[in-house]
Amino acid sequence: MKLEVVILGAGQGTRMKSSLPKVLHLVAGMPLLEHVVKTAQVLEPAAIHVVIGHGGDQVCDALARYDINWVVQEQQLGTGHAVRQALPAVSSDSTVLVLYGDVPLTRLSTLQQLVHQAQDGPALLTAELQNPNGYGRILRDENGTLLGVVEDKDATPSQRRIQEVNTGLLAAPCRDFQEYLPLVENNNQQGEFYLPDILSLAVAAGKVVKSCIAESALEILGVNDRVQLNQVEREVQRRQAEQLMRDGVSIADSGRLDIRGSLSCAEDVSIDVNVVFEGTVQLGPGVSIGANCVLSDVSVGEGSVVHPMSHLQGTVVGNNCSVGPYARLRPGTVLADGARVGNFVETKKANIGAGSKVNHLSYIGDCEMGAEVNIGAGTITCNYDGVNKHKTEIGQGVFVGSNSTLVAPLLIEDQGFVAAGSTVTTKVAKGDLAVSRTRQRNIQGWKRPRKPDTKD
Ligand code: UD1
Ligand code: MG
Image 1 (cartoon, rainbow, N blue to C red):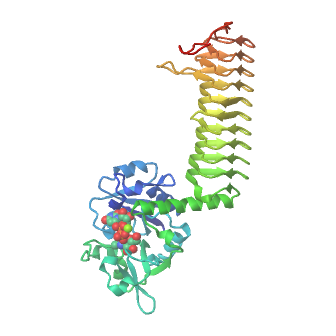
Image 2 (cartoon, rainbow, N blue to C red):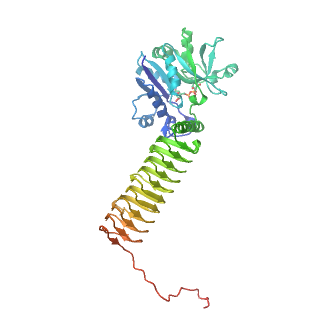
């Protein structure tokens, strides 16, 4: 039977105390809801329906690139009411899996099992919790047959002692939803239409409700506040780090690594503490990332080292390069093989040629640099005239002495040489030396200024 997924996400999320809809809060750099949608996609459903609240435009916009049927639930009258809003768009001959947009850690195998069990009747995912407070409890008869769910607020004291809880995730043939949802009433403590009430209705009609139990409490952890959001974040980070280590990456401390996007690593990569990866990052064989680095949308080639405290954004680092410590590589930076960019160097839209060195205290922006160039400490490309950005072109084997200012647009041809302390404003031809600084003057017998009361 074909599968359709309904994801509930219309809840207010008041406990987040946020202007952002709850399902858009980020976990590992991605909205909560997107995690659930991606998990759902792996099940290859015929359709994914997401129920959002009034004003859910922000949610639609954030997930615009997904093929989702958006269903608006104008008033949040309960989980049963929410699923009912989606029902007209679901085809009658499908199995329907209901997920929560704020429960992102459920394992794929668990969902597959749930769907498998729901071929000819409802199936519910349950969990055994030490502290079941707040959850709906699972009611069973003496033979263990599932009878239904009672909400915490409606439960008797003895029902509250039941530790098997409703995770909220369930699956059933669409026809069961069509049959039982309209019969659900809201005469309960919360005045809501409860989705799990379809289970007792199915049982009353002689159906067997199957259930499977979640492996761990984390699998079903829903985000209601920022404490739970952080629990989910840490669990996702723990899972990612564990997977990397199993794939052959050395991680100094799996609790001090954050991947907010996708990180792919070749073999023998090592990552020191407090490193943050954002967007898409690729690390080649043997790459080493030092402590306290942030890499966003970066690829690093084989054998390269990024030393501690470096920040790389939108950068391509070639093979056997050295970056940092304390380097800031901004978007559009490309380091060819063997290039070295050292401490307190900022680069932007800069091609640094093979084996070239910018080792200390420089700004290199809008620059095309050839191979085997040496840029002395404190060199600045003056790329901005207050209105436009201009380019600095530096040929192969050029040597730029320390504390030079290269005023763009500027061309320094191959083997050109700039004397330290020069301000270079015009082209330096091949092999020429450019010196533009005042000649040194030594004054003999010069007397230092003295305070008036100083005696000879
Ligand atoms: C629900 C279950 C409870 C279960 C618990 C697990 C019901 C009645 N109760 O309770 O048995 O133990 O989840 O976490 O189902 N939502 C809507 N529209 C609504 C109401 C809710 O889309 O009108 C969405 C919420 O955004 C959320 C999900 O449904 O994603 C669950 O809603 P919530 O209010 O958190 O239900 P609980 O009271 O936690
Ligand atoms: Mg909840």
